[in-house]
Image 1: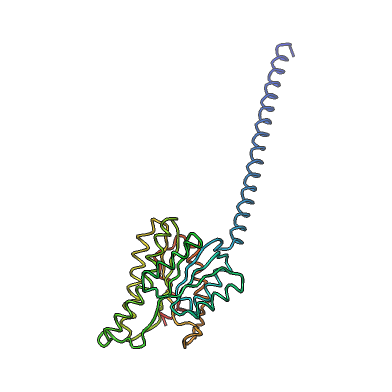
Image 2: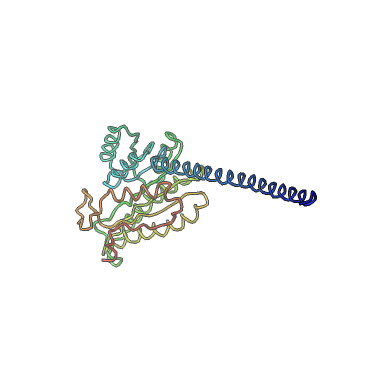
Length: 292
C-alpha cells in the first residue's frame, strides 16, 4: 500500500474514532439526563406521598370555629364531639332550653374542649346577632354554622284545617330560626372569604302537617338561592335532609339503623375542606326510605 493510501486509511479511522467518541459523549449526557429525570420524579413522588400522608393524618377541622344551633338534641351532641375529635378549636352553641345546653358544654369541657353555651330564641334576630358576635369576639372568625330545623307543631294540620295562629307560629319559628343565624353569620364569612353553612332538615313523612311542610320547603328553596349568591365569596350552603333515625329524645322507629353519628359524619364531610366543590346540595340521608 502506498503512502497516500495509508494516509487516507488513517484519516478515515481517525474520523470514525472521533464519531464514536462523540456518540459516546452524547450517550453519557443522555444517560445522565435520564438518571436525573428518574431521580427527580422519584423525589417528587416521595414528596407527594408525604403531602398525602400529612393531609390524611391532619385533623379535618384543625383550628376551625363552629356555631351549632338547637344544641339540646342528639344530633347536636354527637356533632359537637365529632367535630372536636377532628380538631375543632372552639364551639359556640345555643338553644332556647338552657339545661340541655349547659349539660352539653359541661360534658365537652370535661374532655378538655373549648365550648360556650348561649341560651335564647333564634327566631329573634337580635339574639342571633348576639350569638355570632360572641363567636367573633372570642375566636375572631366563624368557619361553620350548623342550623337544626326547629319543630313540628303537634296541632299542625292540612292546609284546609290548620289553625291560623299555629300556621303563623310554625312558619315564624322554623324559618326565622334558620334564616336569622345565616343572615348574621354570612357577613363574617364574607369578610374572610370562606365558610360553610349546613341546615339539618327533617325529611320523613308528615301527613297533615301543612305549616311544617311549607316552612321546610321554603328553607330548601332558599338554600339554592343563597348557595348561588354567595358562591363568589367562597361560602358553601347545603342541606342535610334526614329521615327517621334513632333519636333517644323521640320515639322514632329505627328500622333503617340511621344514627345521630351518621348525621354528624355527614356534617363533618360537608363542613370541611373535603367538599369545597359541593354547594346548594340537598343531601338525602334517609336510608333509601324515599324509595321504599
